[in-house]
Image 1 (cartoon, helix red, strand yellow):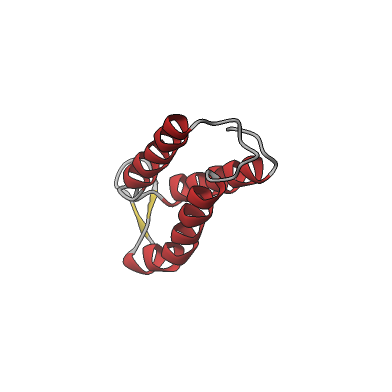
Image 2 (tube, rainbow, N blue to C red; image 1 turned 60 degrees about the vertical axis):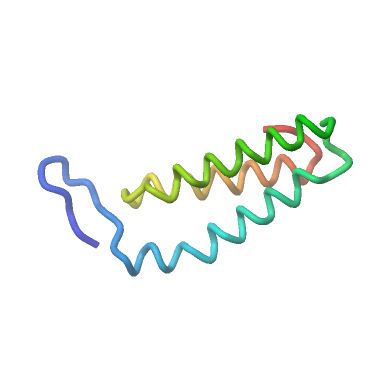
Amino acid sequence: MAKGGGGGLIWATAEDLARNRPVVLSLYRQILRALNSPELPLGHAARLAKKAECRAIFLFGAEERLLHNIRDLIDAARHTLGLLKRGRLP
């Protein structure tokens, strides 16, 4: 882990990113699968829109390099997955 210049922020190293990659990919796939659940009150177009929103969030998240932000994004994805598995929309 490397420290940033002025603010004392901790940046992710290549090793940190490689360690998080399987977790992030798994969460991404699980969320996309959960969006297909018939328990969710979504029509076809709304379901496709939610999947596109999920892809965009993960794409922007892939650019993140601060460790605490990466952890927050993973926690948010786990929370979202929990809601989807209970049949609720985040």
